[in-house]
Every structure is written in structure tokens, then in C-alpha cells.
Length: 265
Length: 267
Image (cartoon, rainbow over all chains, first blue to last red; front, side, top):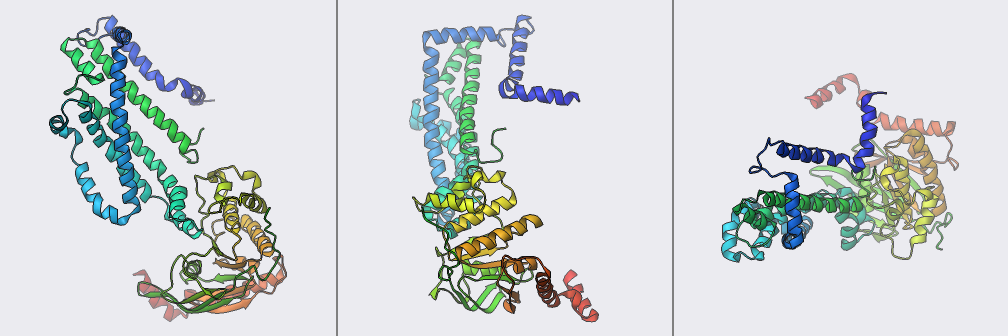
């Protein structure tokens, strides 16, 4: 019996529960230790305990929840609109050759403009309200969903489509029974990419010209050298990002139970 | 519950008639003025070397492609694209991987005909796999599901496009028996395209050898059913195989004539 097999068996049992969290926990411990032993000055990085304290204070005052709520609302609204447009356009261009000829070149051109480069323009257009942030999230989310929906539809096995047609499926049933489920794995890839872009866009746009949200909380704290709050803001982004990805993954597992890549072990 | 047991009614199977069929891919004609009549309820095997046009012929009959010239008539009605009396079994099973076995069989069925799907799945011996995903099935089981999916529509003409090509020898023989039994029970007309002469002899009433886009041999197979692989079977198989190899076999050409085209081909 080799050591690798023993580790393998333990790894499998741990893998479901704890293993993915082992490395973050070790890092956290190391961080706390480094600050406690004064290897790291608290003016460079506050200790995890200090960050925890800041979180507790802000939670008690209700301020933290408000910022999280506002940021989440911006993210969700932007995602729904952007992913909706991306999905619809992806469908349209994937199903209709004429639509693709008409639209795809334009979409690809716009895609090559980094959407964050529009920030100065967005501030002028929308001021410092929510609309500008949501607009940027929409742009950031739109392209990954569009590209992957289009790709998913194009890569549906033509043999299955031919079979569906010859088995008497009309256009609508053909879409619902064959094309959409076939494109779904790729659409999910797009959604998960889009969730990453969603937070990235929000982080950047919330640090500029705003008075609410997690990004504002962090930027504001910087003015007062409250490094614990700055780090807290970064951590909250990490947690929210992970949360969104986990939800997407759960949905993916549900919807793609048939897929050899997703079936439960 | 609707019954699928028609017995061997001659009126269940569709009559098929092809006249002057021409199909070109680019300049090259794959089918060249082909004419063929197939009697209702019969089982016809179309054999030939790869590239002889047999799969194209089947796709034309299925309405998946249109002939450049000529006419295909099913029961004396001109056949265009889609026809609910015609079902195809493809080379690969083409099951929808995101639908469970029973839902694959139900594909395209009108609502309220669900019991039919259970019954047909039972007939192909897979009733207990109804709730499985297609990916966990073996190749032979997948083709049995595909067969059930075709039969559930009660087709009057079943087209089989080398559906057993990828299966192992033992599974093929099992599938031959299953297809023969269901054909006898349901009474549909069957057209099988295959390169396997033994398969043609095991299943068909009639074997048509396709060469350069036209029938080069048309042979009745008058063996008792269910078919057994006895001496008469072997003699027929040998006879057809000899005919198939004799024509267009480069090794059968006289040596001097064969040398030149071969060199050209490899150049």
C-alpha cells in the first residue's frame, strides 16, 4: 500500500468538506502570526483580528450591510440586464445566419474596447449615481455571455439537429429539446466568466465617484488610514465573488446532470 | 393502451418507388439514374463498397437530401421532405444526451401517447433502463433505444443506415434477431444499408448491390425465418461477397493494367 493511496483516500473524504479551505486557513493563520510577531507592521497590513473587529463594528452600526446591499443590487441588476442582452443576441445570431452577418462584426468591434476605458464618459453621462455603475456592469457582463451563447449554439451536434428534424420536431420543439440543451454547457461557462467580470467592473467603478457601496467604503477608509476597513472591503469582494460562483456552480450541476463532466462522483 | 402488435399485415408497410434518381456532389454523380421498386412490408438490404452511393440513397429516401433529378414515391405519393410514415436509424444512435432513455424514446410524440413509449422500450428489452442517462448505456443498448425511438412512431417505412457498424460481433447478431423479430411483428417496410454481407443475408428478403450509382445485382434471399447461419446461408453470403469483390477490386485486375492506375493514385 503506497503513501499516495492513503493520502488519496483521506483526500477524497476531506475533499467534499474541508480540503478546498485548507490553504486559505493556513494563509490566514500565517498572516495573523506575521502581524503578532511584528514581522509585518500594522501600518502595512492589519491583522485578521483587527479586520474582524472592524467588521463587527460596521455590522453593529448597520453600515456594512447597507454597503453590501447596495453593491449587490448594482451587481445583480447589471448582471440581469447584461446577461439578458448577451443571451438574446447570442441566440439571435446563433440561430439566424442573416442576423449574424448583420450584427456580429459590430459586436466584435465594440468588444475590443475595454469597457472600463469608458469610465470618464460614463461619469459625464450618468453622474455619480447608480445608473453609471449598472451600465458598466452591463457592458462587462454582456460579452462573455454573448460569445459563449453564440459558440454553444454553433457547436450543437448537427447530427442531433438532423435527427430532430427527421423525427418531426417543429422549430420551437427543435430549439427547446435539442439546440438549447446542447448549448447550455457553453452558456454556463459564459455566465461564470460574466460573474467574474461583474465584480471586477463593480470594484473599479465603485472606487470612483460614488458615496455608497463596498468600494466607496474602502476608498473612504483609505482617507482616514483605516487599513482594517480597506482590507475588509477587499475580503468582502472575495467572499461575494466566491458566493456568486458557488450559486452558478450549483445551478450548473442541476442543469447539466446528464453531462459526463458534471455528474456527481 | 394502444397496441403495437400488427402482425405481418401487408398494409402496414409502405411501397417505395424510385425513378431516374440522379444525385451529384460537385461534378461527380453519386447516383446515376437509379430506379428501384420496393414491395410493401419487404426487407431490402442495399450493399456496396464505400462510396458506392448507398448512404446517399438512404438519405434521399429519408428526405434528408433532395435528388438532382428523378422522383421518389411512397405509396404512390411524391415524397418531399418530412414524412411521418418514415423513420431513420442512423449510424450513430444520435440520442439526446440530456434526456433520459424513456424521454429519448418519447421524442416528438404527441402528448398522451406516453404508454406507447414504455411498451416499445419493453419490446427492445430496456424497460428497466428507462430512467438512465444515455451515457451509461453500451453501444448496443444505445442503438436499441434508437430503434425504440423509431418504432414508437409506428413508421410504415424504416430506414437503417448501417446502424450496427460500430457494434461487436456478438451484439450485432443479437441486434439482427431483435430487428428481425420487431419487423415481423410490426410489418413495416425496411431498407437497410450495410457493407456487411452477412448482415444483409441475415435480415433481408432481397439484396441489392449498388455499383457506380446503379443496381448491379438484385437477389432474392429465400431462407426461412428466423434466419440461421447454416450452409445455405454461408453459400449465399459467399456468392454475394464474390460478386462484390469481383467487380472493381483492384487486386482482381490483370497485373499490367493494375500497375499504372495504382501509381497514379499514390502520386
